[in-house]
Image 1 (cartoon, rainbow, N blue to C red):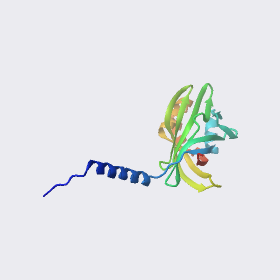
Image 2 (image 1 turned 135 degrees about the vertical axis):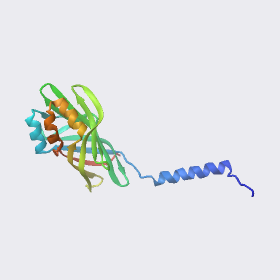
Image 3 (image 1 turned 180 degrees about the vertical axis):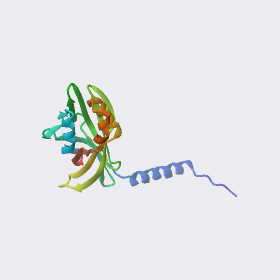
Length: 197
């Protein structure tokens, strides 16, 4: 039986066509801009107050409600398969938790919508730990805003076990109280975003 071999040029052309088809089939992504607002729950604020922690805006963050709600510019993120899949806030924006001489700043928030998680950088008295898993999100939902805007709501923000320990160590939360802190819903994050021009 005679064996036939594919000519090199034809093989290259077919490989290129296959790659082009694969790229066309991949979900499109778009960089996002806009604003996110983090609102701490009353239960979270009561707990922070009990241990003597004050909450303020940091960097380019704005104050919506003093001590409770803060806004952050959205500088990145993605729309995948027609839905918002991630939201990333301005690296220079965050919130500061202050107790005595201890200053803890949470910033550079990254919302992973499919993974229902929020990570961020954690700075304690000038020492930064990047990409810390801060919160798990009980739910996320997207609703259409006034075009071209999209609105993403993330509710049920619960500190991850590592965040409970790291924040607890930094702010002096007794270990016996940390399981109760882990059960607190810390609030919500509302984002209004659109594709970057």
